[in-house]
Image 1 (cartoon, rainbow, N blue to C red):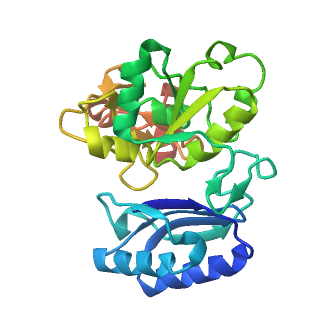
Image 2: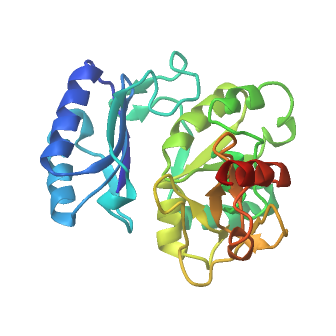
Length: 293
């Protein structure tokens, strides 16, 4: 289950202590970040415990209207429970620029339901630009067709990427930002508007909600990268593999960490290659063989 809520939090540390106690009470694991801007969480557990957690979390006035997104998986998909206070619940490096009020992010892009995304594309055609608000390695296995995919390794890279004239040719076009559950686009869309993008939208509920509605019969293609033990999920058995294996260049959605612990890079390796090559390169393979030998 994943969720977020942008709302002013007067005492983030008090909220952290309360949230940790709740998760321990209901035997949940996952990761929850809290800041003065709100809360961002992904947790897993038994369904009844999750429902009790949702009810308790919504009892706190700033989180009353939080939308919780359910997905397959459970407690065992997370190694432990982490609840932290951070400057930002999504780390763009824009803690002082971001403004929130009781209605959420101030000055963000207009929310579009999945069917409204299709309507805009039907009305505006090729003028509509899909803009990926995730990191490049996430987009490698799944994205909206013909989307702009910034070359970012971390969310902090977006600010630098948005500066200057790199996207000057799309600043006057309708731009639909998208990300896994919608939270990154809440911030990204406001940062884009602050930098001269005239018409910015965001998919309400992110790729998760879009996939629930259209699965693989719409404008999305590939697999959705997720930050838990599953690594990725597909919306149907008709999903395509669009990622490219680092060794054979075959199509795959399978991510693995390089077996050379000194490297540990996250790389795409197909099922065929991973049986004989557990590393990202021949150099790492030699190191790994030396260590294991």
